[in-house]
Length: 288
Length: 326
Image 1 (spheres, rainbow over the protein chains, first blue to last red):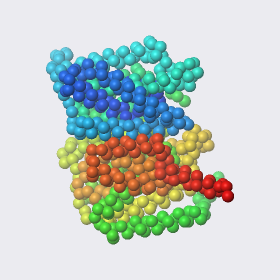
Image 2: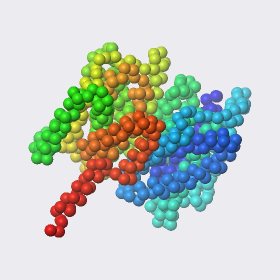
Image 3: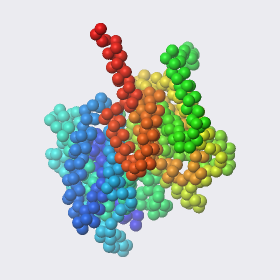
Image 4: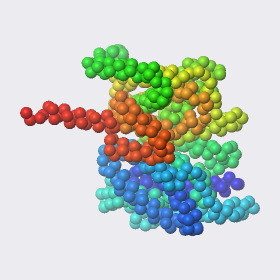
């Protein structure tokens, strides 16, 4: 029972981070390996706002999300767009964007190390017990979960019910055809990339409420987001949300039953199983 | 069928250019081998580092150069080799362990290849990205549950100049393999795969098999390198053996030198290792920043590395020489 609840609470934040990556990969076709660093940057921003201005991490999202949106918009325009333009094939864009986002990831780590140093950070916010089925859990986990679910739900409705969301989905299904029917593909891609970054950074702000983090932990989150997105199928939001919870449960189960040091091994086991038996993802369609 | 078979084993005659290249290479190896006689202190230690990265980056290029699959598994192979020597030194002689390390590296590469190389390149990058960290977690967990300490002692009397010579021999071996692959049908198949995998499939190349085989060679060499370097430290820990930074360093050195030529990586390894040594000594907190800048440089400024840069200007010079108005 404990595993189900704690895993579920963790899954909420993972879902947010995976949705961010999925927008960037599914729509903008950029495999962003600096995703985890963007998340950690969100965590640091929330930490800084909380300790500096005594402002709740929830409220800090009001600042973090637009800032991350603007930053990712610029990253797309400056770094990614030239790569999209010069790429002769999808494979070349893949290799270039992987290398470029590795570079960005290391630069972000370097900047965060210079600003905050290499120590571990955490702060206590809403660290009061809250009872579910007679067992006490930390309130901050629950609040973070509720906000993550709210953001995910909002994003899902926005993608499926509005015209802007329809545009993004059209680009995701077939960028060329979307361009033919009058969609501004470069703009929609930049939009998706920036939105993905904002969602990821918000996820970081929420995670920072109950997780300890440091400047170089981002790559672990990148791994987890990648595993979730591939497990769920690259272009399916529902798959990513479901798989985020699967990963949350699996990690919590392994950490409480075996060893907390083996969480990545749990993620990998799921990853290998998916690669061997359903490489197109649980919800993806076979392409050929 | 039989004529085809005979053609495969026919040895091609060396061209004049290849002979000159071979002579230069032998001469360079001779000079490099003299280093331990001159200096056994800082210069030798730097020499070991450069030789190690040369072997790793060149063997990385064997697979990733023609196929464009970015492998980040180097640290995993390297660490496994190191741990095989660390764990088995009391039971088996050192040379046997080195061979075992090579076999283990090939097996691991075969497994990774079977799981990911049948699919698109992204899966491969992602899988190798976390592999070193995964094995490190498993090792740490295994050692703590078995009740031993988290590290291993490597006690034998191999000194640095011997490690250096071993690495030089290994480097020569890697260059020979690379040269042989380039001339063989295997290398030809690889270049087609790198250009267009669909075309390769349609011309009857068993693309997964070729890729997996090459990756096994590359992984096996990285494991042997780890095994040879184990005696450099007297105490090895998972965090030292499976340092994820190693994989990234190997990738960036190979790319900055130029991964489309066999001798490209070494041109990246020497300057990068020297600068890296300086930066880790003077500004240890800025290593990540420098690595990031190097990656961006490779993507935006010198996409084919130093070799590509040199070839571009050489072509311009030749054009100018042949077509100048006299």
